Picture 1 (cartoon, one colour):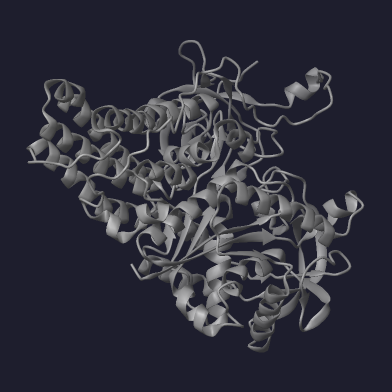
Picture 2 (cartoon, one colour; picture 1 turned 180 degrees about the vertical axis):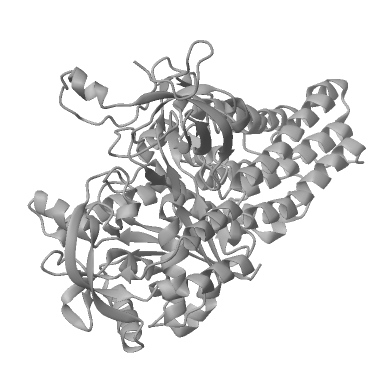
Amino acid sequence: MADNFYITTPIYYVNDEPHIGHAYTTIAADVIARFNRLLGRDTFFLTGTDEHGQKLQDTAASRGMEPGAYCDEIVKRFIDIWDKLNISNNDFIRTTQERHKKVVQHILQKLYDEEEIYKGSYEGWYCKYEERFWTEKDLVEGNCPDCGRPVNRIVEENYFFKMGQRREWLIDYIKAHPDFIRPEFRANEVIGYLNQGLADLCISRPKTRLSWGIELPFDKDYVCYVWFDALLNYVTAPGYLDNPGNFQKWWPEAIHLIGKDILTTHAVYWPCMLNAAGLPMPKTIFAHGWWLMEDTKMSKSLGNVVRPLDLADVYGVDPFRYFLMREMTMGHDSSYSEEAFINRYNSDLANDFGNLVSRLTKMIASYCGKKLPAPDEKQEADLEIERNAVNLNEKVVGLIDDFKIYMAIEETLQLVRLLNRYIENNRPWQLAKQGDIKRLGTVLYTACEGLRIAGRFLYPVMPAKIAEFSQTFGIGVDTLKSEESLKWGFLKPGIDINVSSGLFPRIEQKKKPAVEPEKKKTKEEKEEFIDFEDFKKLKLKTALIEEAEKIEGADKLLKLQVNLGSEKRQVVAGIAQHYTPEQLVGKTIIVIANLKPAKIRGVESNGMLMAAKDKNGLRLLTVDGEIKPGSGIS
């Protein structure tokens, strides 16, 4: 890997305050940036906010505010929360800043002059919430396929970017650069999307409909489409126009860390924009998964959002950072619960790490007068600790470069657990009682050196707590992080050891969660009834599942081939986290047979299966005994 390292988060849309999803991406980027600094790489870490578009204009108006003033209010919340979560970004960009406006207008003019942008008439379906146009085939039951909200039919003249002509080039580029889109199944997902065709991109909005945006330099009656504007932040910040030397230093190493829901904009729109502008591609676009609450994505509209400072305020910032980094495998979804948080904290931090620090420092205080003893002749058990500690650096470097934060943490915890077993097996208290001072000194010194090195690699995840931990040896966190500290024998015998009063006090499990998800405020709903005539419109039939397979790149979806007696159909169902394909084949289920066909993740679905769900999971509705496929339900 190069000596220069550049990582970005998405720039977050300021339609509301940060939630756990924002926090995860930002903390993950921060941890990766801190690791790279720890490894001696010159590192640039960028985050920021996206502040243009229809949603912001409408939200500000509904509150009687100017869009700029509303953005200032929300942006302050992001800055304050990132500060409290100890985020070490080098720059915070706002798309309303002049430096960014200058870059956007420069790129727009360049592409217009080179005839990469043209004016044309558009007729289609528009979702103001996602600020995207959709074709008829994209809609799901007449609604936006992304957010599920109603769309509006719009006919208007706009400017278009010639994105469609780059489809083959982009497919070839992705295939030739396996690190460009990670994980690999996301690259396959993008290629599948491109194989369905690629239209030109509408990149303007008329001021008669939207005034809050960056004005097109070649037509003052239009503003720039929010995504075309927002993506350019990644080249604005490192100095695309105002600092070419800086830009050359950082841009070739760019790594974009994003959520999987914005993969298309980053892996399709963005490369095409860069290619048209004559700029090199970013090194990697890494799409991570979602945090789920009871298998459902956290979202404001569902009212199940966990606000990051709720947990951090109750249990501490660093334990919160640790849980997010340790619990999620980057690229896949992960479920949040407070019970899981407490279990992880007690197991890893209170029991394994914190308890070891406390025991070790207390033994040195009792047996050695708070002075680090000198080691004597080494035995195989001591050498095993030394080998594992020294080799940890190489393991962690490889894992971080491969975006496997959780495994880098686990490798470090393996050393901590090895140290705990080492203490139990060598029994310093017994050595002290026997007066075996030489062996006692070797065991306590070896344990301290191993613990110090483990702490070094936990620093990027828990910077404040490890800074506190470093005072155990009186060396300070900067010394702990130094390259020199990688060497075994860094701690000098005779130094003062400070007794730890408990880095991570154990958390007692509460019956009621200390932090509950933010509840969506709704009016009391009355039970609604339908007429029998309405019920008769539904055609419920039995269906035999003959084939089942996973849909690549979709964590929850399965593609089923079902037999309805007189015909066979394909149905897409979100049940992959509850059933394996093998469990489904041969089951007779109940489906709604007259549901309008829809495309889900680009895969056509003709019908909907019936299922029941509670806190224990999801179960398909089946029939009692043998019955022919296609039988009607009455």
